[in-house]
Length: 107
Length: 357
Image (cartoon, rainbow over all chains, first blue to last red):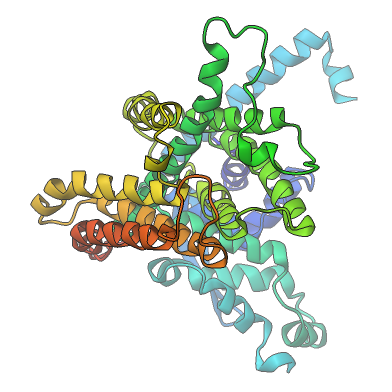
């Protein structure tokens, strides 16, 4: 799973969001490191939709334009949990090899 | 209003880069998300933004990147774009195969027994003759070997590594060309530049077709193709040179034309038996024929300037030979072109996108 896909799935973990809502949430989750452009975002959304990890939730009108909301599917939730566990396990190994405690790693 | 368009219209123009089926599905959503990222809710400020701002270059680049991935499609894209994607991927691998075989030309003598004292063989006459070249001949041979790595990396699915190394591999030739152009020392400027643009730069750019959604190349046939090409093409050409039959060897654009023509002829039985137009290979061969034909036509400019130029043949028949090669290429390509047309014109079937629910 790419970093962008991981962040997009994470952005949808606590509820459906529309396109720009996902962009903002990803920027916040990544502490500004991942700034998705719209073309990149829809490339990721298209791929995740095709893979069955997210699906359209609803459309809402806003300023005369329709916003499409997306939500995680059950497979998407499962894939995100597996990826999070994998990344956490990797981080634990790295911290152990560097001899870092939790406090040192945070600091 | 700036240029008669507002921000939304400018962004919709950018979105025209995307295939129609994709715009039908996603355009309104993309426009809404894009405008959300610009507008603040303040009517005065938003009015100025809509009138004078335009999509940033990174924004345009992200749409262009998405368009490249969709047009050179992988799994889940409509059949037409998938066919184009497969054809481009096949053509890139074929060009890289030729580069890699040329790398083997330099590498095999190094690996032969009794050659332990020399790291690389002597440079070819064209390079040795270049006065004041910026690069030592070793760089040329290393650049040649690097194509072997690029080819194998691409076949094995290491797309990003292959792209990075390929970019590095085409730099020495560009520097050499620029230097030769500025000093007037290029022996065949038309052919040399055409080679760089068509067989170096274009395949490197077209490596964008190897994206995550693209099916991986068939490893075994492509890996076997490298030694097969070396034994069936490179070795006989080398033997012709070593035995003094230099005049029998076509120049590089001629060789490209002949090779593609032979591949077309070999593919004809399959292309003619395929009524459903499933021949992605036909489309690949048409692409390769376009590249080889363009290379041949442009390089004839060198002979027009000096018909006696060249190390291979004597006399004023080079242009006639080049035209004959083009004719052979065109005739052979015409045999597979109908199948290629059927393949790329196949009715697109939109990929499955779930409806709202």
